Length: 89
Image (cartoon, rainbow, N blue to C red; front, side, top):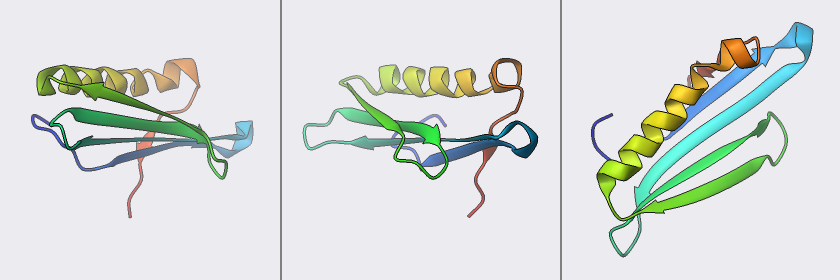
């Protein structure tokens, strides 16, 4: 994960006993002007969910943003009580 754009990252957090079914995805790409776009989507599995897109002129700043977002996912067991796991296609 040292270069951008990245392959899509898809994660899910599921705990059937507590009715937790969350999804989270992140895609990094470049636009026509050379800026790095980082698109993040999240929500309950089966719903439209929410999305944000951040634009970075500096690829290093985009990479720091991606790493910060992934670091936040690692705190899910403490926050939600269930860890995010990668989606295997």
